[in-house]
Image (tube, rainbow, N blue to C red; front, side):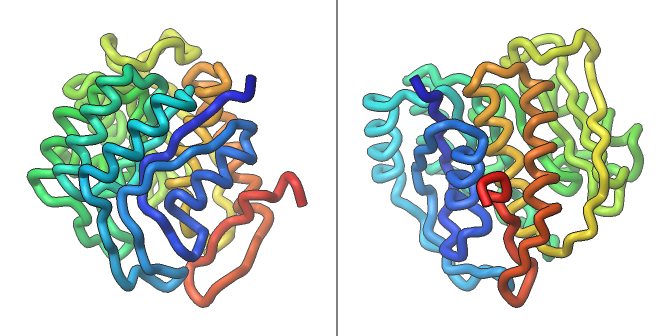
Length: 272
């Protein structure tokens, strides 16, 4: 039987991020992909023009249809900015006892603007993160989740520890943003939902190489979806992250160049 994965995220009509990137990534990593749409966006490589959210009742119906027919072996959650939508997702994941949940907390725009209000953030932290096997914030998102400034590798460890210990999930804190190059930190407190993760240590560094490619639209979506796909196939958390980072490096190294802004990666580089 083919393993399956579900993405719960917004649509990107230009195909570089959101559910479109998630589905491409999941298929490239060898699993059957499904999607529940949290929002429609009108966007391209130069920015977002408009967002139209799904109604909470409709999102609930999408999730019911998926879980009662083709049960996902892993779930990736991306852009969800509404408190009511986050509540629906948490309730359905609890009801169906979903496993291998990867949360990519899309909270800060590239411009630095907050994409989530305090009410939605509270529900994300108290209802959704405790269900996750791993949450994958970047530096600005981890600063919001931890309430701490991050300016060094030591700060990354401290912030990841606080998030993991207070929310009960493993944390993959992504480097970048002019800090620690392409090196990511995986931290797990003693009591988490992360299962087997491949190391006995509290944290492990994943050292990456900086790829000189300005076209990085959808990198966060792609990495989290690749992690979910590999968890679905039975790899432990550490192995899933290593495989996902290798896939992301390959997609960036293909040097696809489309659009007038920060373009998409080549998700299908292995099948060209």
